Image (cartoon, rainbow, N blue to C red; front, side, top):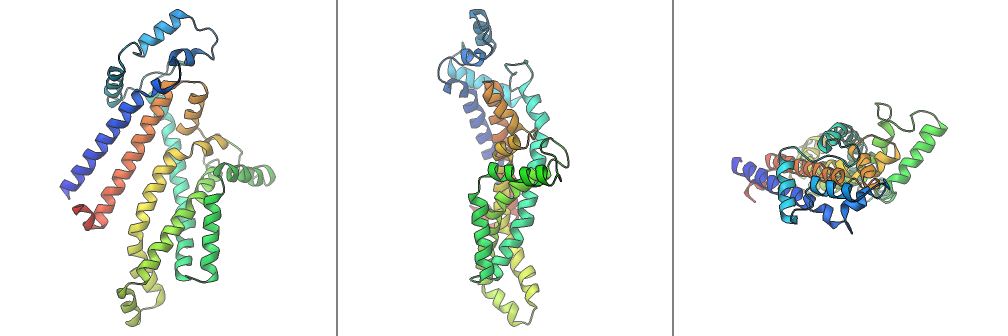
Length: 307
């Protein structure tokens, strides 16, 4: 187990290092001169400003050296400063990160509350009307764009019914964006829960449990549902990792002050250091979540440790 943990942690560190290095050269992907592009909106850029910022951000150095310097600083927690305001990028992102995590947790919780019962009902009623109805709802949940669903919830629950605020960052404000994210991702949870349960219900030990005279709810909840949760755990980790960075549009629709909304503002203002910092924080979060998922999966299933 220790070797398995060490290998996963080493893989996570190498992945984060590669992402940070790639983020360090991201600024050179922008067509033209990045400093000129960053100062274009101000309308007051001159040669002295361009030269000063070029030196400040190390753009007068070779690309490989810039990437290594950025990686070295990033690993020490220094992601540079913003173009507009000169504020520390790491501080800005970390201030917003708790809001993004809170929304991701709320969205994941909603997806589980909706998705697991749906998958359970579909598996128990496989091939029947309830199964087709649940899968139809799941397909609709995946197909409907999240931003459209969010706008619909605002129209119904905020403007017409007046139950929740339209925008902001508070306990009441989190309900609609969490519901939006939860409905979209509950479809994946439902499909995985159904698939895992259907496979397990065909196992010999399930038939043995029924032959012993156990009640159906004992067979389903104890002997079938618990093993199925191993597969569901995989989906839960992937959904949570996606929610950490995939809720950019939802944060903007509901004016939720997370790192996703901050990233959109940075892109519109051409504040590339802030965009680079967002990529580093987002990628690091996903790597940490997937690594924790791998470790948990290895704990639940010893066979994984031998791979």
